[in-house]
Length: 115
Image (cartoon, rainbow, N blue to C red; front, side):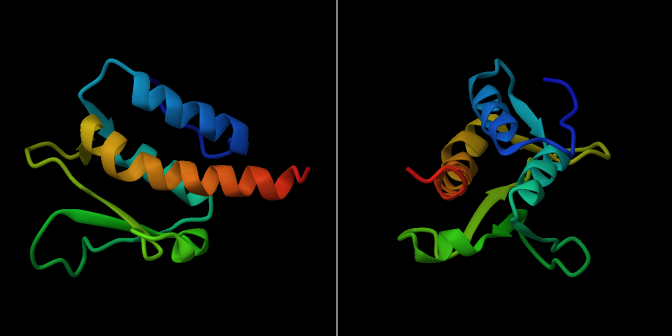
């Protein structure tokens, strides 16, 4: 997948998330994930400056506060390894982050398109 833009519609974000989940890749650039999540209204908790241990990165969204199992947050572990770019394993993205992002997308789409 190419670089993800920061001015996508909610439908384009939904398609991008689905594309990332189906893509034949092993890793996803964490900056692309940040870009997608912030467009949906997630708050990114950058622990890089004061991190003492661990490699988990967290995002919060008000929609997830009422959803059991999320407690308002989704998180993912960064891949360990060299290089200047931060990456996550696609399998972790699909298992841990994408379901929470999809919940937010579905709730926002339902809010924007009431029946």
